[in-house]
Length: 201
Ligand SMILES: *[C@@H]1O[C@H](CO)[C@@H](O)[C@H](O)[C@H]1NC(C)=O
Ligand SMILES: *[C@@H]1O[C@H](CO)[C@@H](O)[C@H](O)[C@H]1NC(C)=O
Image 1 (tube, helix red, strand yellow):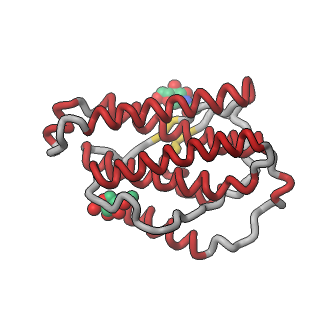
Image 2: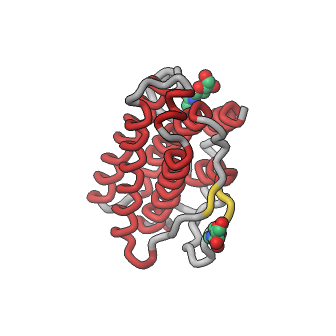
């Protein structure tokens, strides 16, 4: 149910994404975009850490998954942790910190379904933020993360969620405001010291 609402919301937001941004692009710095990316990577990292702590190999087997599925999720979780470290290192002491989250994952199947949604939103987030990035090294780094998130999305869809690994010829770019609105239901509370992102939420 939740995923249906989320996917519907993605479709609805994509339809209105021509709406003007809250600030002109030029007022948004590369550091803002790195903080934004880190905000999302923290969420994904916490999501996999929580799920993998909660569901062991037996839980995945009990949900009907073959023995390799949990290990793939472990790999995905390691990638997200590495993205968090990479972005945190780039931002230094100003790096935004992890929040407290709440994920609707009572069992491995619902976890996989939320994973499919989060990975697909991740792809849309990187695609929709690329045009803000001025520094070409950051742009290349973002491209290399985007393609890995897309592989995650494909694998999760095909092997854990019985859905199409590449559902469309184009992915849907979403603006930071749109993505942060989608992420908001998962976020309980963030450290008050976290920098404020320059996007309407
Ligand atoms: C995951 O599977 C559910 C149930 O089949 C489906 O409704 C949902 O759209 C799938 N998620 C993604 C991101 O494809
Ligand atoms: C997160 O939750 C823990 C305990 O559940 C609490 O100690 C901590 O202050 C919370 N942190 C934030 C940023 O809300």
